[in-house]
Image (cartoon, rainbow, N blue to C red; front, side):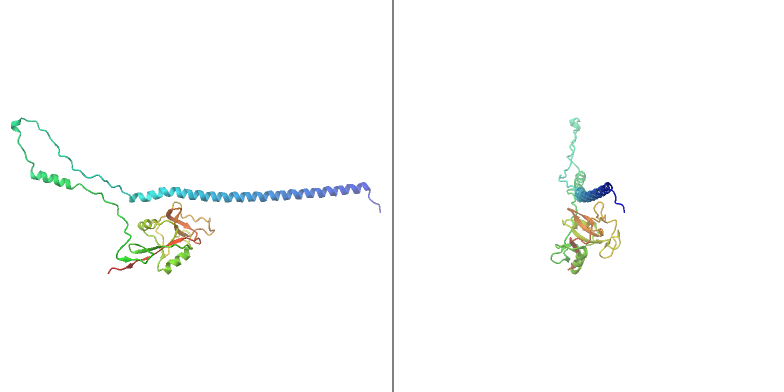
Length: 276
């Protein structure tokens, strides 16, 4: 058997060394590419997080800015100017008659004329009617201690925070339920209380079909949603926002919210009649 020349062996070894060097270089390049991709993914993730955070901040600022206009619009019908100017009677008109002295006859005002003037004065209104105030107490009805009375209903503003379902259960153990707002007067009364409160409205059964806790459907002509609410945004809960709450950043209108989050609540029940 013939042995290979020394030069051939050396060339083959050199070729093998170059191949190993190329493989190592390719490995380094691949590792570098993977590192760059990972860094890029981290940067993109961070930018998306900051974008969502900035969007939420802008949304809150927009809500706070527009609530001033909404609140002023809400209160303008309740404010009526009251005139403090006292009514005055017109001065009698003085007529100067220039005639020869010998034909001027003294005259005395007739009683009928005086009566007419007096009657005309009494028709001038002396006061401006004041806007009616909401009556919160009725002597024929009573509420338990800690409950606020309004006509024939009692309201309880809880100090504990809990989920929507837990709040509903807590209201029912006290003989009531989460509040059902079915009049503009009731909304105005409740929104005077600042904070975040669960109310008895949910679309957890069918998305977009809002029902009160007693099973009655929401009257779409009598709602107090704020701006674009309800929007069912899955920001804090991937399941969306299926329960209604009142109050957000000082805006005492309605917002849809995740039922799992914990808030205070407003309970409602009938007052006790004490009059026969």
